[in-house]
Amino acid sequence: MTKLLTFPLIITIALLSSCGIPLPMQKDLVVKDINAVRQFSTTDPTFSKYVQEFEHNGRRILNDGSFSVGDVPVNFGDTENPNFQGVCFEYPDGTKEVIIKRSWWDNVSEEYRESLIFHELGHCRLGRDHLDTVWFKEETGEEHKHSMMNTIIVSPGTYKDHKEQYQKELFTFKTDALFESLGLQEAEVQVLEK
Ligand SMILES: [Zn+2]
Image (cartoon, rainbow, N blue to C red; front, side):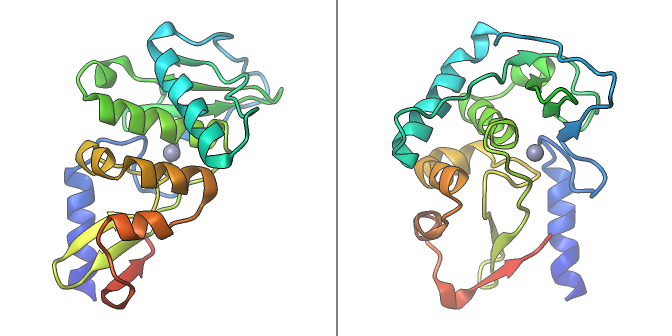
């Protein structure tokens, strides 16, 4: 059991390119103190297409023509923690915003960008918290994230291959399609809580 747990921890640290690191006190969903005021009121045009894609998929998957991101601006800025590439800030007046680290954004693929924006809007718009369980296939040692709301965001290759299914889980919490798409079978997979 010790060996089983040590191995994923090392991998997690090595692949750290995330919205956050897997420590309980460090999260990219941050509630600001009483004097804090939201920094932006509109979204940087750089992020418009990702926000539109999020809305388009939300309307389609939820079958709700009125679904929108609403008043959650997305902008470049200081995530206030070197381990966070993006963050959802919540303010005492009830407003929210997503802040993205530009130095990370400028050096990653489109899939990584979308994976991060959708994760942060998962916090700020859908009200979701982290879900760090993974499916572990003992036979091959493979681990698959249960959700885009994993503390370590879904990597670009996996996201590209299973985008529709990860988004279904994001909006509906239902994992059947994702589980099947990843080629998993109940009998041979364990669920690990991290
Ligand atoms: Zn997060």
